[in-house]
Length: 441
Ligand SMILES: Nc1ncnc2c1ncn2[C@@H]1O[C@H](COP(=O)(O)OP(=O)(O)OP(=O)(O)O)[C@@H](O)[C@H]1O
Ligand SMILES: [Mg+2]
Image (cartoon, rainbow, N blue to C red; front, top):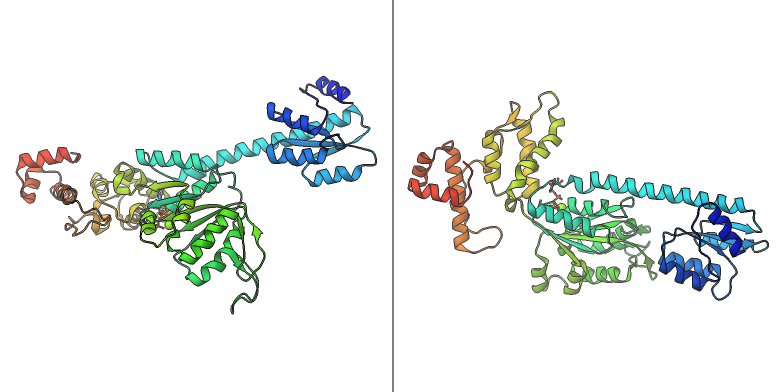
């Protein structure tokens, strides 16, 4: 029978190899790449069903077809239930087998096509939303593409408004889970005592207000991605429970004695420095390491000024619908300079809002400097303590100096002699510093 089948298949252009039992089949599958297994149910040593289960575990993409003799119909059904693609009953005519194989091939072709389209879509809408050509952003995108397909947890760390949620979504979009849910929860926004039932669900009667069963967010995100925003705000008690869920991949609803399996990829984010929170005893070290399998840092906007014009144009284009009749097409040179010089403590979100506001105020086809928020224009008073906790006097003085020089140049329309007067600096000193800080003409 094996010989006969091999001949038929080769006649139809297939490359076929035959083995005499399940164990040999597994060895053969490990040695070479195959598209399809055609297997009897009853075989010595390892039967067809055990082979099917093992194949599904080790080679989940392989199409499996079973052959069963007349009278063993039940085992064919059982095999289908266990994930076989189809079955042929013995005895069969050659064209019956070939027909089943053709059908399986067509299915495989469609599945591949589907995967290809999905990847294409993800390329367009996934990471494509993340604007930035600066080196730190390119590095970030490389990291995102690398971790997205894997099921590891990732911890995103960055100041407010740097794009943590955007990146979390991109990781989901670029993963094989893209068609399943992305569920986001802000751990700081929900009171501690409600958080457990929010995450894991509860059963009716678990506490006073639990009038019916409730599904938790982990269950909602089953098969997909759960985004735990501001994970540092999670109370310590819940941190233990979260760690256990991540390790066991099963959840227990509040008030329930049973556990249920879940398959969830977790991406967490924190604006707070979690390693410091660990040192201060506010965040569990074991959970930190469990989340931080891959740590991704989102650079603040002020560290990548070359992305500012790009982002500004991106938001301008996106806001076009606000002004359908009087389109705004760009920024004046002064407006761009002011945006590049500003420190953007609220990062990309602040820039987004500044551009939206400018779109509303702007009278001509270009955003002018006066359409931007005041903070961007007035020379800023030297900050007493820098927001990022850096206490270096030298660096703080340099930062203030650079800001004042930019502001003076702005105010004098680039006239260096007058700027030097305003700054109380010699003309030569100003030229030197302009060069040193890389301030454009
Ligand atoms: N690189 C980027 N390209 C395009 N848009 C961006 C980029 N980074 C951030 N944004 C936009 O800026 C806004 C803020 O981003 P997001 O909400 O992801 O920040 P966040 O880090 O989660 O902030 P917070 O800590 O305040 O929650 C969003 O509208 C987002 O779409
Ligand atoms: Mg956020």
